[in-house]
Amino acid sequence: MICQSFETECGYICVYEENGHVTQIKFNEKCFGKIDQNIAIQIEDYLQGRRQSFNFPVKLGGTAFQKKVWTLVREIPYGHTETYKQLSEKLKTSPRAIGQALKANPLPVYFPCHRVVAKKSIGGFTGGIEWKKMLLKIEGCNF
DNA sequence: GCTTTTTAGCCCG
DNA sequence: CGGGCTAAAAAGC
Image (cartoon, rainbow, N blue to C red; front, side):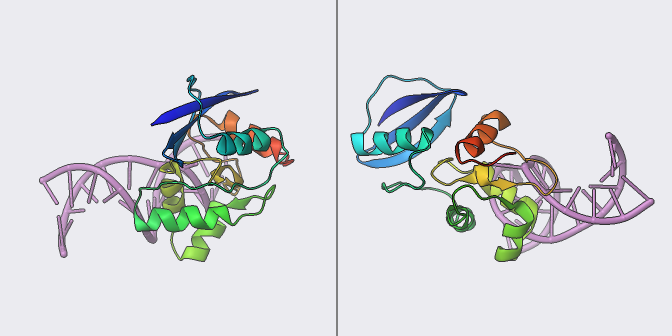
C-alpha cells in the first residue's frame, strides 16, 4: 500500500492506493509516496476546481447500509448540498442514521459527504469542519 | 437474536 | 438558544 499527500490551503490531504484502487483518504496527514499518476492528477485537478467528478477504481468495506448511503451521496451534483433529512427520506431511514454512515465513510471527497449538511447548520466532518467549508468553497458553494 | 450504546439531527418551547 | 426527544445502525453480549 502506498500513499501520496496533496497540499491545500487547509493542510495536507493523503490518498492511499493499493494496486490501482483507492482505499482511503485522510486529512491532515503528510506522506511522501507517489500513487498512480492518473489518480493523482484527478485529485489535484479537483482541488484546483478544474474537475467535477472522479473516475478511478476504489475498494470499499462497510456494511450494506453504509454503501447505500455513500452511493446516494455520490449522486448529489457538484456544488449542490442536501440535508441529512432529505437523504433519510429517500432511504426511509432517520437523519441520524445518515450521519452515522457518513462518519464511517473511508473516502471523503470521492464520496462527497461535504455536500451533506444539517438543516440549520453545516453539520460535522471527519478531520474538522474547516475541510468541509473549504471543499464547498472549491465547488463555489457559499456556506 | 436480543439489548445497549452511540449518533456529522431535529424540533419545539 | 438550550433541552429533550427520537429512530435507527452498530457494537456488544
